[in-house]
Image (cartoon, rainbow, N blue to C red; front, top):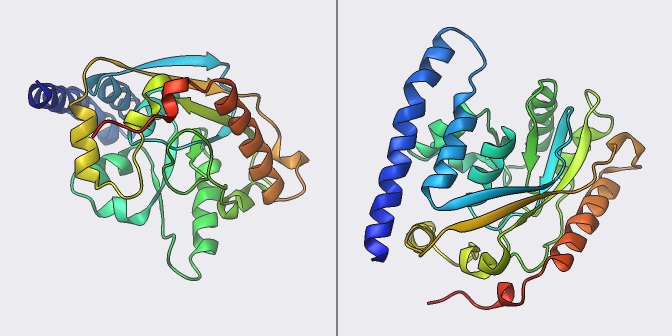
Length: 252
């Protein structure tokens, strides 16, 4: 049955892409901002079994979202719900199909391991913030098991001091509830193995996007303060909504 579920979900993903691809290309030809990447991400989230729920209030103006990172489903759920552009390592840009799709959503590719690259990355992020598309960062820099938070890496947050335009920082807790441990992408797990496991799981997956109170980065002394404030608020939300089975080891 797991194999059948994987095939059905992959077919639904392919169907979602076909539905959104042609109108997106037409929007691009007409040089109009395309709503179709966001619609594709929302359809893709449903295709893999995710049911996205919203808790709290997304900021109505320009915003930078700082979120915990548990799974590749985070991007589908968050992108579909908010239309946010993401910051990703530049290796994703070279992935077949995935890299092209990410570029269509204005993904900012950064070279994390390249010396001297930070200045150019900050310039690119500053340019992205001049638009009105929300920008989402996963400041842990990698996925965690969802039961807590890794330390935040504040380097890219330097772009917010001073911000290139009036933006608010909104911390976001991506919450998989009791399914957290079963969904989490652990560092030693191959991408293919994780996708196979997640796509073959039984039943729907409820993903709650918990939008926490936003704050003004201009009121912060430096990027470390921004990182610490967001880390504290997301950590408090994780503790407040911790499910007893969320810390259990995923099934083998």
